[in-house]
Length: 181
Image: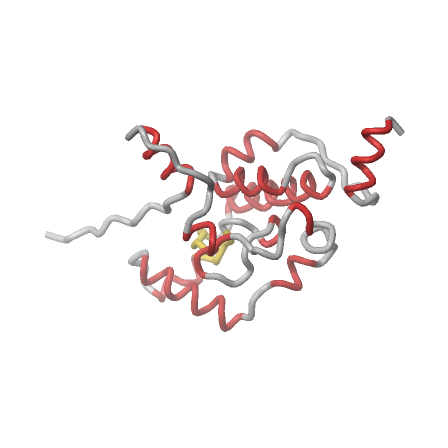
């Protein structure tokens, strides 16, 4: 008889909060070890114009191949997959760098099977949420919550939402909305 080792589920802040709510407890704040490794502390709502909304930011922040290969090997081993199957998977960010995800911490990576519609849809929703954040139509925190709680649901919610990058800085956009200009 062959023993099958179950794959561990990824624990999210939302799952913890839901479990605590069932037990009648409340999760205060969204801070956890999960958050500490997933989010880049240098990217906040106040800094998006100097970070994620600068063209080329995410690409410039990518870690070296040495780091990503090491993380990929650890994730393959942890999930019980053979390292010979590594080519079937790619490393994917739980919270993309373009949405303030940490570019090099292992906690922000997961394995994703290469190819197919799922990969394409995830890339699309990441780009859409990034556009919505940088155009001022969605807060960074909301976009991070959407993508980290399940990109499929975020895709269903935002796929049809129109977004256009605005060249004007966010603080001026807000001023114009207030003044009616």
